[in-house]
Length: 370
Length: 246
Image 1 (cartoon, rainbow over the protein chains, first blue to last red):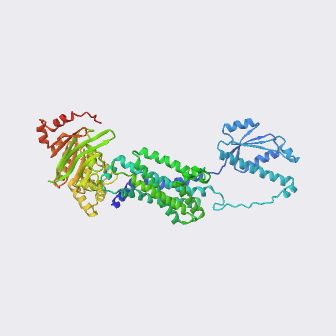
Image 2 (spheres, helix red, strand yellow):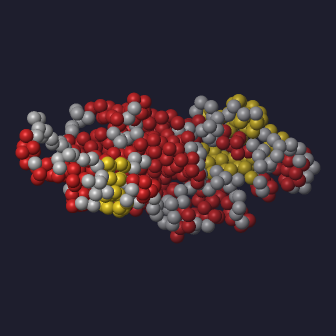
Image 3 (cartoon, rainbow over the protein chains, first blue to last red):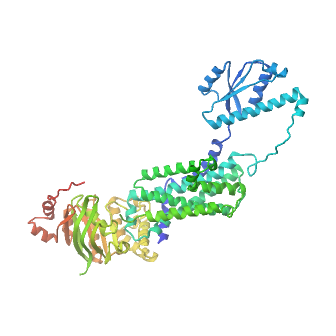
């Protein structure tokens, strides 16, 4: 019997004027555009300089900062208050104030101070800008020391030297971190939204009643709804692999079959959730809003942007019941570290749990009568 | 003649509202049983209970020998249903709808193929066979929906206002199809608003405010109520209604 229902589902998907395009375009757009636009890397910080010294050293400091490519000089003020006004007008993000007699103090070995002050409305941007600027000034400081007092530079060398290396993403490349996670997003949106809409749609056009009055077993009907999403998910994720390879040169360190296995379980879980929602919703609007609500929650608590480990305990508890979070970990681990089934056993168990739970609920909450 | 539908004291309440109030009746095999009533009289609710779409609050009922409480899925195997709202898949072709519903009711590919060919020929649908259902005119759609509902040769077919919105000629043809179905042994349970259609039924029940006020053959009803036609019978009974039509 399921053969006939599957034929129907596939024909309906292929004949839909919008869905087949969406299945191909969506992963393409997300992976081609998003990693370039949404980046953690802070660049193009607007710098306002209050140069009270107008000396060659003060100009050299400003030059050094600008040549780092992280800052651009957008404002030169004569007073701190004037500089603050440019921050208010959004013309500047960070202020550097160079005191009078800056050059003189350096040459006379008296030591001097500069003040930096950042707009911390976006705390992360402010903080990172501050760190960049401090580092550049510290380097400038070292350069000056070695130029002016070579003997001091030697004696000042550290007792402990740090030899740091970054593992699995050695250039701290943001895209390497985001691309595997975006594949999870693609699977979630395609295979979570579409099933939720598909049953409610049948309710609205009345075909659901024709199905309910027939002897179709509940589990058969739901399986026929779910199986096409495996295929859709696999197509989308395969497009994802291709884009990751062609555009970002990213190839998973681990095995493809492990990713596909996890994806299969995940699609089953998230589609099951979609069907549960669709069983409870009476109209398309209801279904879309409910799915949207859960998606927002899931995405924010998934570790896509902010690491789950640094969330408060209560949020970590919620995240533990978030299938997205588990697949995010899985994708990043397989892509970057080459993890295997044993290392990802916890996630495997969790995702299997979600799959059983949501699909059990999907069959139970589907009522052929009322 | 044996009984196909047997209902005793069937009641359905939604909260305080009693949609179907203690109805009892029997339908014999091969009959055309008309189920009449104003809008909101409870016809559709009663029919949905018989089809296993709605769980009765009280009472007993069997359809095609199966209990509507305990064996709703077995009832569903033995009946056909055509709802008020057109409910074929519009993005499937004519033959694909037949194949889908035939398959759902457990027919085999060969049987589906044979019956599709036969049906397309009988309805003169050869040209429309490969068309998407959404491109068909309403009259065609309704004939198709009826054909789908009896495609698996059920014991009973339930038709919920099957001729709403179609022209008199198409209605006439539709009733010819209903007669063909009864000739092949299918019992027909039909709700309608058209009193001329009520005359075509073997027996008619008239529902007012969730209760069955009258049940007999059209001829007997006209005699009892001293009326020229079914319309007058209906007017006399429906006037008693205190329930607001929706």
